[in-house]
Length: 260
Image (cartoon, rainbow, N blue to C red; front, side):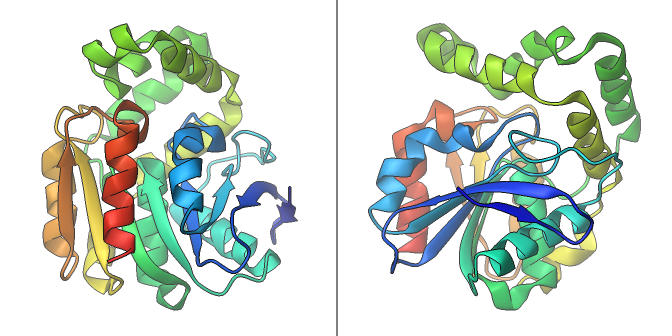
């Protein structure tokens, strides 16, 4: 699987699979996870698409430059991956932080994005102190010190109880994340203000929201829908990591939008 070196020397790990002549769908995951967050979507998505997943800098098998990072930097990493793989245009589906990077791409690289899916995400966090507190906690206690609270934000109580294997997978993935990578990306989220970018997005856009998502609440997703021209919204009965909590419905929702 390819490892692509970007302009500042960081290496981004990517994996691509599916029919070689199919259009490319690129997936982008949340803070504190890696590309395996999407494992349950690989089969339905590769029926129709060449599927491109990657680990953003600081995560998974990508390298970990010293932070802080920025949304522009993370967006340019994506463009470098596309250039390295000689891919001209993609459909994009990003969840949480992946949606934030997608907002930057939609506004700043419109010729590279055909359709845009922004899932369980936000465009701005007014409470910077919350992110400062989370970063401080990670520095002091590591990610193991906040994994329980994080899983409670990410998944409903019902899902946590009925899907112990999925929960263990996510706990392991979260705790394995490099602390400096988590903090660098957390600083990018803290400092993000994509509100001025939304009106510049002209790609057909679907916002996917979780009805019970405390991390990026429904009203924030609705704000994004209202400010991107022509955007639509789908609301799933899930918390934050909707693609894992409702894997079949999530895949149907994505494919229903992309294939129409």
